[in-house]
Length: 463
Image (cartoon, helix red, strand yellow):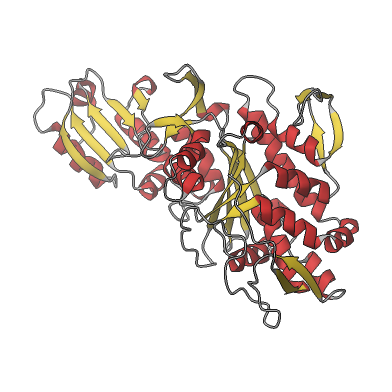
């Protein structure tokens, strides 16, 4: 699965260009939120002029600008265009080290969706549990960590990254501009290059570095972890289904990396070892970002203060624990709750999408623009049409009316996460929570379906 690279040619970069590329790589491997980018640049440009690096020539030594791809993988999804001023989203994937050990096509051990908003100078990261049960486009439902495996194994256009990106896009409803895939060896080497990372263990944790007979127990306390131990730390699971603790440790590691590379006393070492660090990262990081875009992200990351970095994960409150048809432990998403967590990190539908921007339920409902179907489950003729007209007058986006299965009480079926619309309709139509059903389906033609029951005939407030 490893992609070959030309190591025979060499590239001569101005030191300013080298440092931008190196720090841009830091962004790509998970420090998209770091306030690091050009502390080093200012220092380096005053001390050194030229460093030779292996790889294909892509930067003019005289101009210092990109003339072609440097780190782009030979295969992968076509990136979504980014204008440099709009919100940009990047999917970070870490591959399962156990699969690498076995020589098998890997699954994703880590999925974190990063976002940076140049306008508001904010950033965020959302962790997606690997056991999340989602629709994998073209392959029915499965664990989200198998999307990469399926894409690689079937040699689909864009390969594993392409199908993984498409799966996450459909699951969260978030457009993804770029991806970055990090091999576990690159992660290990990078942590060692920055002299380890500091973490704080809050409860006893068993970690198992790659290899035999080296399992260790970390008691509560502060630690500086080497690359091997850091990898074991972010892979550790306390028990079956404990993707949530793993996600928290992964985000802790990302922020610890950010803190480590901000140290002034580390900067001389980073500068001195820049060529080898670059070589390690460029051999273990695969992305559809161009060199220009990596530098652009690094410039942007410099401007984002730590307090503007949001962190969240899809956790126990957003899922239902279940079993797949094959008997695997899985996490079934609760769409409306996933949407709320998502909106804590991303702005999807304009300035009124996040909860904190507006408290008016009608405005929040209108901003979602959810597609709503109204079906008549009663014997009262014309009820669906009349209800549809009534809801439309209130600002609801009714896209379908018709007849449905007979219902004693009005039922709501949610096919796509639209929590504000669901809450608005549930309150307006007095729909019991026991009759609000989540049936996530990204291929559904509507987001919410209402099947009218006899209770609506008797108690509706329509004029």
